[in-house]
Length: 281
Image 1 (cartoon, rainbow, N blue to C red):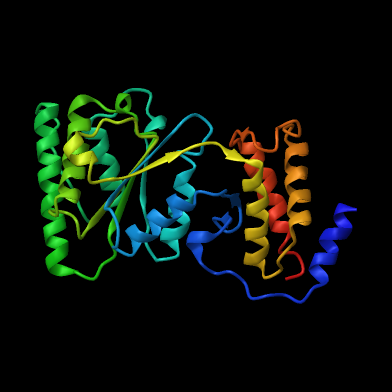
Image 2 (image 1 turned 120 degrees about the vertical axis):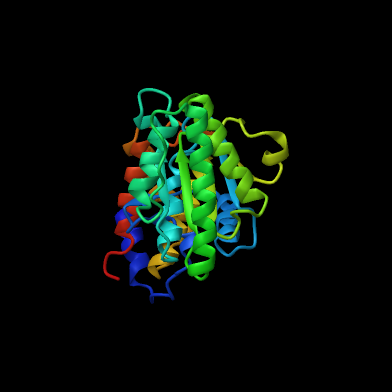
């Protein structure tokens, strides 16, 4: 019966496709599902268009998609021709030191060519790193003022992921972005952030608190994807697709208005069913 309903929906005349990347349900070449998060999408749009904050923090409990937010960021920035730099803090077994942070930035932004003295103290290295980055931003402003801004995304950015000098260096970078010094060249995003910015800085950041998704968000996801494909579906078809996701991932016992953990299985299954809405387009 469900397959019949979906086929019947496809017979209808195709509508105009939804092309706004900030609102997409399927992202990253339709390989990933991204549910809800209207406020987050709006904040990203404002940041990209230079109408909002320059620093974004994303908080929330386990399985709310804090670090998964990276894929939406990458998706919308790619649509604008911007290549964001992602530092995955969880890949390091020990707290990240200034030297490791410097090496990563040099790998991502070879034109910056930041240098520190590995024989100096880590506090001195932090001073040198921040000073050089400020200099690079000033040089870019003079030479290529129209160049797209740099986006620096710290994934899993809990304070325990950094040494104290490295954390202070990041705080100084955030402050420089907030207080205009680097405002026209750099944007910073802190995923899985746990409140380590000073209050006078944090007050000028956009703070996004993520909660669990619900079954209704699955319904909305499929209707959004169908609109993207130019083949809108009705509420019954959307509910049928959502029920299939819940059944295939072992969550069919979830209450209609209860929370739903944002697991890899749910995302993968929803993305696969979402792609099926494009068949025949």
